[in-house]
Image (cartoon, rainbow, N blue to C red; front, side):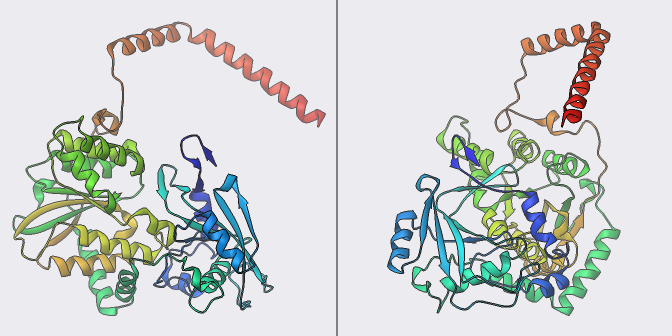
Amino acid sequence: MSDPSLGLVFVINGSVALSRVECYGGEMYNLTLFNQRTQRLAPARTLTDAYGLQAVQTIGVDALAAMAAQKNITTEILMHGRVIRVHVPIAAPHTRASPGLADAVPSVRVVDFYFGIPLWIKASTWLNHSFAHVWSPDCGYLEALEQFRAALGKGGPLAQWHLLTPNPLFQQEKRALALMHDAHATAAADAALASILLHPLLSYADFPLHGGALAVVRDRSHGTIGAEWCAVHRAIADVAAVDWIALEMVSQDLQWALDGFLHANDTNSTRFLAAQAALQQHVPWPDEYLVLIEQARLVGRKQMVALDIPLWYDVFRYGESPLGDAVRSLAWVDALPISAQQSHWRGVLMGGAAHFQMPAFTAAFAQFQLRAPNATMLFVEMAQEPPCTARDSRHHALVWVPVLAGVCGALALCGALLWCYRARLSSLLLSTRAQHSTHLQHQLLAE
């Protein structure tokens, strides 16, 4: 995909993720079956993913071409020097195939390296990270990735290239997987979850009077205005009952931007403008989540917490799987401003509902108990009370909506004219559609 401001863009969308999940019969969220079928849902020392991408070190097209030439490896320069295609030799062809992959494995893998090319994720968010796209038909991408990593890994023919990117969350993955398979932790989380579901928090006035309390708003559909969004909206406004707000849809590497946006006194300052630009560029579904951040600034809140692991984890690891959910949940709990020493606090967390169901909930609850053993976790269940929409709360600092009397007057005039001539317009539209339909029928008949 080409973009006037960013140049070449590599797109990862929902259909790509879905096609990968379908390789395993749609069982990516079933921990046991996914593990059995792929043998890939395990801690990894490098950033390697579920999409067929491999994070690599940024060395540049020319440097990689020179390294390949020393090994007499065939390369091609693509996209006006932005991408290099490498025909990677496979030292030991494998016969164990991923679902859908034939037993015959080629001795060379075609791999495209993208250096400094933005990735477009979730239809609204950009990620800048160098990566390799391993070419493989159908569901054979896991086998292709395995061969590619073997070639670049220790003992591989290209080991001296040192291109693989280490996984900074390797230890967290090990801890999350251990908790998910720990019978005691699972039983404790299961019992706690049953109790939490039976006693939802219906109003922030009902917060426990003593100790710490975390009210969890389970976001059932990201980017949707509904009861969950309204519950967070009310929590932000209730500065007397709620000490801080934590949002999944803001990644931890944007905490500086949250702080800068909420604390800046001068909206023309460099700090404020930089924070505003970063939030606008990297927070997905801006019509919903940026509005909440803007509301916090308007009511004078100074503490919001960016929860999620940076986007590279979703892209280059199994971020949307039971293991990924558990790792992200551990990171969320660690980011919360809580501790065993705090005697009284009230926080509201908005996060994806999948993180608060088994098996991923096991890791989140275990870490929560470890950090705040005397605190209470609650699930928020509040009815949507109109008016409660993003549009009612929107402010131009993050999501610009012009509200001018002249524009409103013009729209009102247009509305009146349309009302007066609605019958005539309807007749004209019906006539045009009939003509268009007839034309299409003639085309089909001619073909």
